[in-house]
Image (tube, rainbow, N blue to C red; front, top):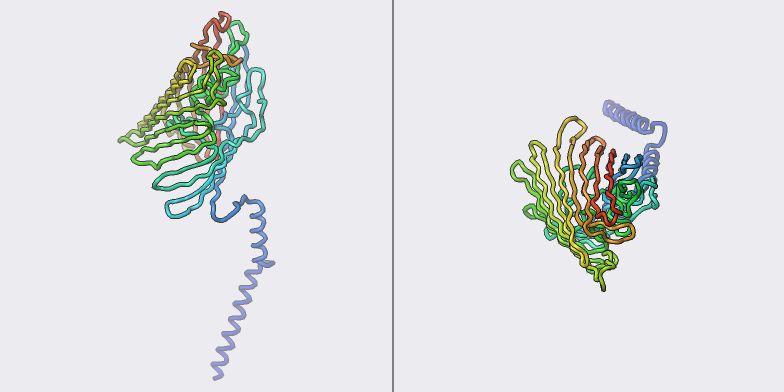
Length: 425
């Protein structure tokens, strides 16, 4: 019995020593749980939180800026600028919640931050007239079925918005696409050094001559989010259809096709949009009882030889507006994807654009027969570790305006060299 008593006493002593060791180890000079709760409270106080636990919240976006050197034939300078509405610095709040397996609901709130709006900089202004503004670029909710597609309601991109732009899979879109937004408000010089009554953006009071007010030309017609209902089909055999309607009978239908054909990556786009909105289409004062009506056709194709990285992209836009002659925009870009460093893909490219019969003067008068071209080249370098891309590019812009509208003088070319970067978060 004495041995049993000793064994019990020994076990009890060991248990006391073990408990004491645990308490001492956990104490660490204070109450562990209180310290942990205090730290959690600090993190909660400095962390973005969503309003409920049913809907997810993802915050994304990017910050992007450029340095632009320009020469209009009689003057040159260097500005720090943004990229325009397609690639302006922005933040997006995206939420979703599962309703049932295969069904979900969600929302998108997309805010653009315009620290220096490039649409109003020119030879006489290095800073924009409406800098430091926040624009609600998109705000809509949606219902989605994995099987039947997605329906969205609110301010969002119409079916034709950026349709041709979306055909470009080269990864050089931030550096270059078919709209020269950074020269939008720059005046076109005449051969004697004076300013013509035209700007490189197609006309100050026309919101892009090529589009007759319906977007920002040349090329980017149907070019901004609108209050609409939009349907995106599921992707079936590489094909997706997008349709939208809203804003006083504005509508559009776009089809996308993406596939791999052996060693080739292929994408095709076909889009057709129309509007009768008098707040969009610029009235032609030369036409009696003008009734607004515009239709825009877009066709584009992309082809890439994946093993070599060689690619090409062609885009065409055709605008028909009642009361005006139809016009066309042709854009081609080609290059190669190279793995030269461990930083990421290196993307040299060349580009060319021609826009026919789509320029207004600064008083809002249409100039039949006027056209614009630009050609350029550049290189974009991915920096994968920082979710970043940097680029350097050059463009030369030319305008062909009837001499009857320029006092018999020819126009000078405009040259720009731009270096910039985009970093995502």
